[in-house]
Image (cartoon, rainbow, N blue to C red; front, side):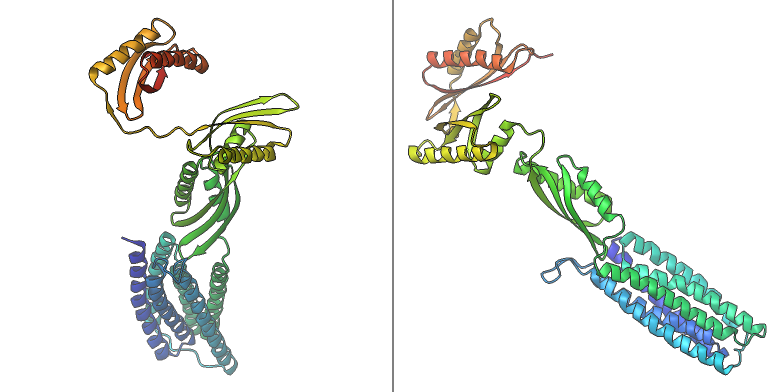
Length: 457
């Protein structure tokens, strides 16, 4: 069952219960002349009005956001609760005035019989059931309107008990018992209204729910990749918790990694709050463990430049940086030189004017052209040559050789194995020697792509 259907059903059932009990108490109160019972009937009538308002409001409050209400319609529940509170104060004031008048004038006590007691006991049982059902629905759906309705019916139980005490006092000969009970009902109504008004006004003023900020902050900080939460704000609109968070993330992370962090933050907040709407703003920041190479890569990426083979030499008093910068092969030299100079300036701004920067300009490696698999005998010949050039050296087990013909020439891919203890630079040197030997033996080979891996266990 959906939360909207649950809220509407509970509110609708409550309407019939409120109407029936209010009518019964009013008729009996008039019949026996009990101000306390009439006051409680009027209180129930206000509850009936409140329940009708609640029933109407919950049908609208769960509607999704639209072009005019970007945060949905949940505030209607708070507004309806505030309106019901005003009705309660009007009722409480009227009852107190009438109770004071009866106490001053010495109005005769009501006629006592078993009927009012039966009605009040039934009313207590019904109100306890309604209060429990409404409280459960309010807790499940986080509906402020249903919570206010549940509080009403819980107070009705106390009011009915006060009326019973007043009738008992009247039966024992204390003429003022009924009027005093009516005044007690009015005071209970006023205290209820005060409690409701405080909670509702705080919601309308966007006061953050108690503990919500700490819980949301902890949930977001627990997401891998989040360095810290710089700022976080929480507000309630109906049953939805809206959270605005500004979180620090490493500036070296690519965009897709930051987007992944954002998705995980949404999942973490949903798990913590159930119904939450998170606005997550990532702020890239430098981490304390960033290397010089990391910082240079960030500079290049911010300028959308393709660089590789970044080498850094720290001479103590001086930092020397060399970079390979890839640009469009058809670009004019003066334009490419301007790009290189701009990169050098950005690096000097980051590290200081004393840093020495050398940028090597080279053509951007084009995408490999469309090709087809070479003839089997050609692939076998190249595979045999690769095995011969590798020989019994450090690189062995040449396998998975693929040869493709393209307009630019032949493209060769192969896998090989090396000792797991070998360093990457040593593996690269040996494989590079094999690749050079292959291109000398087969001049039509445009490019050789190798993949070295340790022996199979």
